[in-house]
Image: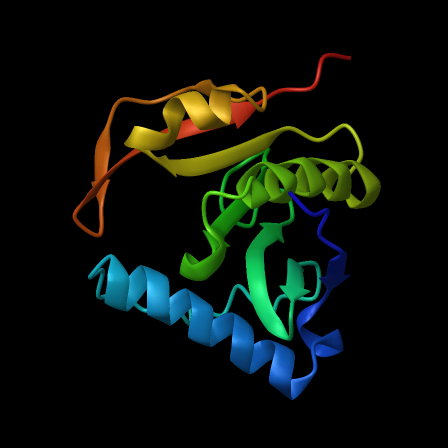
Length: 155
């Protein structure tokens, strides 16, 4: 497994090509592969505090997620969302690297703030392995079973 090189940028810092690659990956996986017809362009990408974390490998985007500041999605929590690994590089451990880097990035930009995610229910153990705990019953989001999970920093 190779170690990915990460970039963290705000919307304004993204190049046109990076933005295109990010949106194409999100649409290819969330809309086409998972057949979830929803408005991916929700204006949260453009909020100045939103961070886009991503990595390229061999000229193609391989992993991506976005981090939203406290209170944007969840009262009292920052949020990690749009977590995605490109289909052609799945199974190589990049998802773990992505979440580990997200937690490092959260600590750098939003120190000691609690994190909440909306996770696909079948990934509960995966997120638990990164310190998240379930905090909701199952609910449907775009026809897929999800659960709320949070990572709380002890003070």
